[in-house]
Length: 467
Image 1: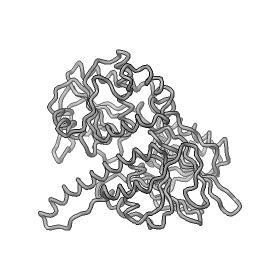
Image 2: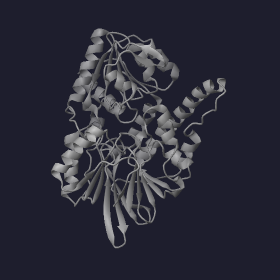
Image 3: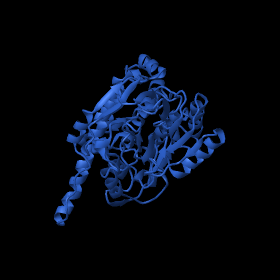
Image 4: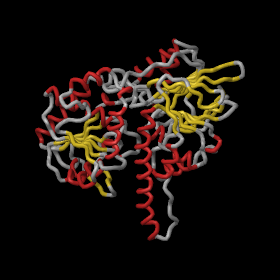
């Protein structure tokens, strides 16, 4: 038995880990690599293995850097089953279809210019038809239910507390008379966040594949999340500006809305108009409402006490779907709040709002999520000015703020605590750190080495290890 790391190896995105049991091949996640556009397109299109040779996929959650390249796998000949939780499957219907429409739209835009130049036209990475074929491969299970994705493998999905439906994957692999347990952490959530339960810690393992996104830093206390929003709302009310919040449609948008609702109910913030300007986020929020089995006790209590009976909706909140409604926000005077995708400002409606409102003194941009290297969000967050938006040089005049309290990823202390729990309940022989930038991975590797006698590996892309 061996494992080969084909994504999120010494980088954050593109989660994809291939387990060869000797009887067949199982893929853990099949995510999109996100980086420089040309390189990302080529890497996502050209899978490093024969897709038809993969027997099964076990999917940790619905974020595109974990699930977003499944249609390429199916396009390449995969005919097995994709195993995941009920909520993740429902989310993937919206996430993958939205991704397909973006790929098609982007290629159509590029091809118009290439056609005028007499150059070869591109094909999209995948289309809505490929997504439909992918969704037919999904099979869903409950948390903590044992299932067999392929011969010789028993699996279980434990609640990872990261986003709705997210899971850590527990694999019991049969090797002759011997059985070995491999745990893939997926993305580990934080304790004490609203809406979702705290992450469950698997009971021991022989081998652990572990995320390391924030292996080198500690977050603000989660209790700061409401306070930061209140400060921002007060600022834009005083300065008659717009608060622009670039937010991932899945997870972060719902948490920000939930926090605003709490403060609105308690009279802690002015009743500013708030728009969630993302059709995808609107669809995803409906999926949240459909899966109360994933909610924590706080969310259930809030549902009972909420005056509107909806913690993800309130009187001053508008979800927009129509493009005309979105365009109207560009000319709308402040104060107000616009929550829009994409979370890293690489595409989507947030670009228009940055161009129209973040160029105005008195406005504010609040980053509530991770900003990867080489993204527009990272450049704005780091103070680069001017920046290019839709090919134009734009000077940012808005106040820039970041709020790590909103991270859905465990920080260094929480990662080490999760690892301690897994180690204390088993006999971990080897750790593999994935899903992190090199500095974060090395810091976490050093921390693990001081607490565990097991070997700690930081694999390169394509590197293979015997289990």
